[in-house]
Each structure stands twice: as C-alpha cells, then as structure tokens.
Image 1 (cartoon, helix red, strand yellow):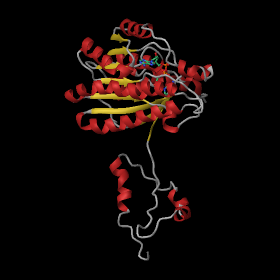
Image 2 (cartoon, protein in one colour):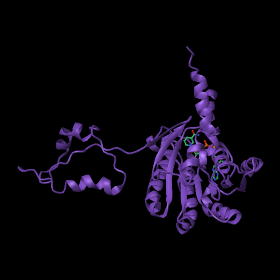
Image 3 (cartoon, helix red, strand yellow):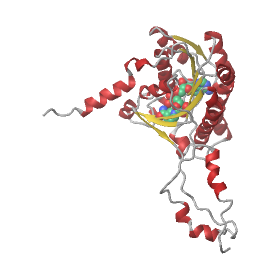
Image 4 (cartoon, helix red, strand yellow):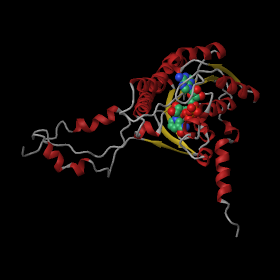
Length: 326
Ligand code: NAD
C-alpha cells in the first residue's frame, strides 16, 4: 500500500492555485486593467496574474511604507519591468488613489480604455480607539474607502458607455468582523463592502460586475505580526487567480464577498433570523421584547436577504399583524 504523501499533495494543490494551467481558456486579451497599490504584496501578484492572462496593466503605486509614509516610483517601476520581462504590457502610475482620475487617465492615455479595476492599495494606522487621532482615522479612510471611490468614480463612466466592466475591491476580515485596535481600518473596509454591493446593483444591467475580496496574505503588511512559515503559507499568489477569474468575461458573480487565502476561498453573506413580528395593536414594551428574546435571536431557519427590498419584506409583512385580543 502506498503511503499518501499529504504534504506533497498539498504542495501540488497550492502549486496549481499559484500557477493555473494556462488559465484554461480564460483570457484577458484586449482588456485594460488598473491595479492600485500594485508595487508590492497582493497588488503586485494581481498585476502579474492579469498580465499573464493577457491584459494590459496599469501598475499604480505611490511607493509608501505600510503606514503610508514617504513616496517612491521604484515599487511600480519594478513590477512594470517584471511584466515586460515576461512579454506582457504595462505602464506605471505613481499617484495616490486619492486622485483616482489620474490613475484612470494613465490607462486611457497608454492603452485607450479601462475594463478592469482592482482596488487594492492600502495602509494601516493601528491604534486602540482611545489613542486614535483624527489623522489616523482620516488617512486610513482617505486611502481605503475614499480612494476606492475616487478610482471607481473616474472609471465608471467609461464602463457604463462600453457596457462592460469588472471591478474587484479589497476589504478585510477586519472589515467584516471588526478588530481590536483597528476601528479606523475596519470602518473603511466595511464601507468598501457597502460601496461594492451598491455598485453591483447599479452596474448589473450594464454588464459591470463588482465583487469584493477579503484576502489573507503574507505581505509586509502582515509580516510584522505573522511567523515566517505562516507568511510562506499565505502567498499572495494563492489569491490572485480568484481576482483573475472575477476580472474575466467568465466571471459568474456580482455583489459577492469572498474570504480567500492559502488556496482556500469561500463567499460570505448576511444571514438573518426568522425574527418575531409583535402585534401592532398591542403596546410594544421592552418587557415584551425581553420575553421573546430567545425567539428574536434564534438563527434556526435563518434567511439570507440579498438586497434592501428583500430585507424590507419581513417588516412589511408585519403591517397587518393584529392580535385578535389586543
Ligand atoms: P502591502 O503593504 O504589501 O502593499 C500595499 C501597497 O499599496 C504598497 O505597495 C503601497 O505603496 C501601496 N499604497 C499605499 N497607499 C497608497 C496610495 N494612497 N496610493 C497608491 N498606492 C498606495 O499590503 P498588502 O498586504 O499587499 O495589502 C493589499 C490590500 O489587501 C490592502 O488593501 C489591505 O488592506 C488588504 N488586506 C491585506 C491582508 C493581508 O493579509 N495582507 C488582509 C486583509 C486585507
């Protein structure tokens, strides 16, 4: 009996995730992609993947430290050189995502269009809420949520006009679940999910598909808090193939949020309990709510509303909920 080589199998699976077999017919030929913060970490891996799939890539990077200090053109230039060395097409852009129109202008000037936007640039200013300054809040908000907005605001009219667009925005598990010491980052990242879901609804009929990833990757952003073997297991290259798929004409999703890392990926959605509709012809009191609390919060038979209209259905259903004995 052959012993199963689990480590080898895992390595093979991870290798396949990192190097999809020539993207099995999924191509980005003829498409122009903008990747923000593409000079390092995840953005670099996304840019290389999209270029390998045939896209012309704008490699945007301001070249700052992971807390947003300093600026440099070196990071973006190095990735452009990597793409060119493998026979791909790329140009650099060194503006902050806060000036989204300049990034999109680079795509239009260099390649005459914009079809794919991957909003990825980001920084951290971690502080407990008590110690967080307005500057810590504003900077993180400006780069993550406002930067994502500014880039999309500039790209959107072109996508509407050509009735084609693929947008991948980057949130974080911290934006979904919150985290100690990251109130600024969590709030900005949660805002990105809401922005994505709204644009998915506005773009759907125009073939503009908008999805969000919450990656887990070993980069300089996480190297300070992760042991080296974890950094190795969480290569950005395990995440970029999902970005490539979502960026393609074959993208089967919009308005979805994916947690992804180490070759694993899963969509995340909201769930809601069945809820309790209290009779509207009886005074609703805190005591009445307390008495039914276990029913209110029982997630058995949960539902999964996907838009505000679906969400409102249960509220509306209670309009006529009258007790026979008030
Ligand atoms: P990173 O620090 O390795 O790379 C971020 C890049 O963005 C850097 O090259 C930086 O110069 C650039 N950048 C920063 N501010 C910019 C600005 N204003 N304009 C243009 N470029 C700018 O970080 P990473 O780990 O690769 O993170 C990429 C994205 O993924 C971020 O949005 C981050 O919040 C998110 N994320 C990462 C992880 C993870 O585990 N690494 C987890 C959750 C979310």
